[in-house]
Image (cartoon, rainbow, N blue to C red; front, side, top):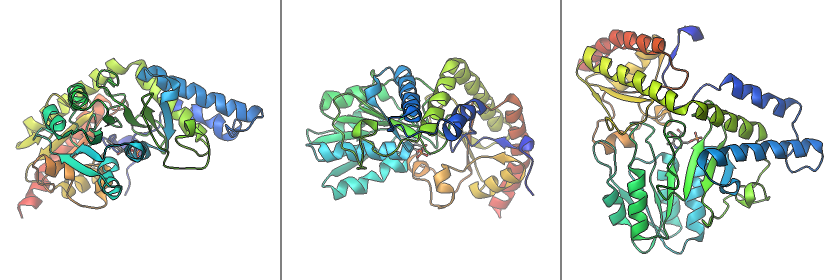
Length: 386
Ligand SMILES: Cc1ncc(COP(=O)(O)O)c(C=O)c1O
């Protein structure tokens, strides 16, 4: 039996978010009346082109870069892939470095790069999910073409010391392209593009109350990047194909809305997150927090309810109206142990519940989530003990 939407507590915003109604409204005309192809020379085409131009301007202003440095893609996965492959194709060096908790969109490039003649060094993170800047830097050689470090992890929420990492790798080899996946971090914290010497930065719309299937890649001016799709001149020739105009416009609207009250919203989410963590730890011992206690996303509470099998917890939570995930959404169907939980020394089958908040999460949502956890965790532990 499915619960009415008003009865649902949605704490799986790390997987995806609801589209903001204002974002939806901004997209509707681009489907129904202003539906032109941005490459057409007539009035409808010109309107589509100027809508894309305005969206690109929004991102350039938010990121503090030029419009020529923004490439729209079909999402975070494509942005990550484009960054890695696009750099690899034109680089002189044949070596790449990444951490062992990258998103699969980056980690899967190990095989791709290896097939292109690269050596790939995978650097392990510490138990709190942080990678030591000197550990990354010491992996960099004169032959290193690119280094990929995500700004914030999607499962355990740990935020990396990205400025120290950027400085350390550029000291070792100034020609390295620094690729940063900021899909989870975007709108949850400032993006230190210049301070961290970032050359390529991946973003996704559906994590910030925008539509699915659209993202962006920041490409620092002067970065050599080969297109991975051919057939047109759209997106500065880097990502050809007729533009997803409604998606791009909706993504820009979502980013603009999030930036309006970003600091206050981040603080509000942080307080709700901390309350959720503190109460879960107090009421349902033994509970531990995965990831770093301070250097973590303001919307991520990844909790280990010891003794409660994760899948049992998840099913019980959903039956009570609480939507969460065990690790990342992309692992849910595969049931493979999460590479992130393994990397920080956790048994993936232990009771990890990833509860992720958003701008839409209310105080009442958190209280209801805690009430549901009160009911289900003891029951799940009984099952785990059998
Ligand atoms: C850190 C991270 N990178 C990349 C992606 C992929 O983004 P998209 O779903 O837009 O392809 C995700 C989505 O889960 C993510 O969390």
